[in-house]
Length: 292
Image (cartoon, rainbow, N blue to C red; front, side):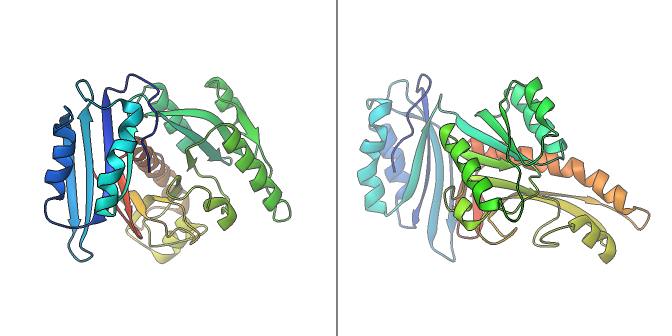
């Protein structure tokens, strides 16, 4: 893999890396940075003892770094090959281009757009895609192009091709499903591995699939939750990024569960998007390693 070109001054770099564990990895990686004049600003590492696998996130200043930002990926590649590592480097000034997919529910979209307006996310939002026109006015308020692509069982393949075309034309890096009430096909998800973030309105792995609040209500649970995860071909079983819960009681109606759950959904999805956009997540099979 190579470094993503910087869209700004290139003053800091972030490396995410995973590889089989071995003695001296942190020292070797720190020395790579040190001997080229870099100053480490933050370093987190983790070893999965059972799988003997190593994970690391390190950021460093490029103010006195001897390698131009454009050559950083090429310079690091030999060391990564030696380690048998999966890795990526992001440079300051590079912002994820993030498409948001929605249906009719607005709470998650409003939370993202509000936080984005405050500068909380290191992203650009070039488009919002929906299978309904309802949230077009909200997108217009924020000056974001809004595309309606209706989806039915018969038209789904064509609709997904149109959605993919829109994302490709906009140079999209990440897709956020902000209560987009459609299941993406394997043909869609394979194009964006580890780059589609979903919010599910239950504390996974409980109540997978549709109507989780009704399932929870009928089961009489005392805790409900929300889960943000990466999308895979297996419904609601992708690597989990963020979760939260709230207590409920026998007094709560189904409408109460839905109302109280909305707060969890919007906050959990926003936290997941922040972690992803700041490059703090490494996928480890069905799990994630998150440096926050």
